[in-house]
Image 1 (tube, rainbow, N blue to C red):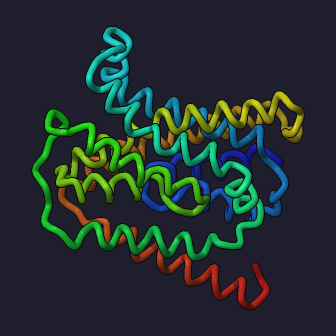
Image 2 (cartoon, helix red, strand yellow; image 1 turned 45 degrees about the vertical axis):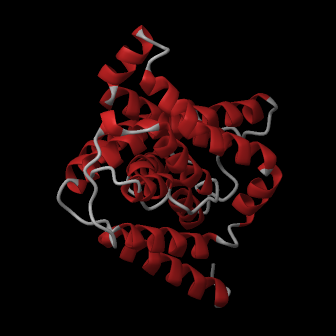
Image 3 (cartoon, helix red, strand yellow; image 1 turned 180 degrees about the horizontal axis):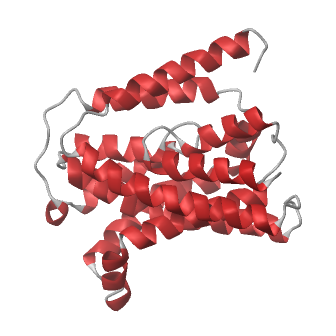
Length: 259
């Protein structure tokens, strides 16, 4: 892998981690396009570190508050919202790893993402702010986040959808969705790091790793700030149409034996 390919994969990871269209699904497609299907556990880890840096940078004031008061209500909301993904991920770890390797269901998963995004816009907009968020809301959103263990189901798409269904206003839905991504990303990095330490990662140049991480961090920060601003007054339907369309194309290519 050269640095340009790592840079492009970093862009894909950074943007699609926070746009509701699935970063894992797009990374799978990006690797396939570049002929890098086998490359990447170490690179995946570095790309996720890049997006983690983006979240920390955007939410620096919130994380400073959490560090100063680790037993705050926000800490407990994040813990409650993270529990479902941990439980389901551990119980069905082998199943999800096998699906991720084959990519056989990726088309259907993109379509599912699109349908959920479309349905999220069917109801009336809520008015709940962060201070109105309950533990029941956080748990409900966390259950939807757990669905995103499937590779092409968007984590941000599912959590924003769930937040809108719980009547959070649009800006708050995106805000909490991205904040909740932090434990999920940290957990993913930890699991990948275990495999890296076991020697399962392939050798990639330090330059490519650094370029990929920096690219993911830069474009991830742009995606977070843009998405929160966008969702204040715009619909998720454009992302729904995109995800459904991409899913249909993938299914057609798979049926034709091309993909």
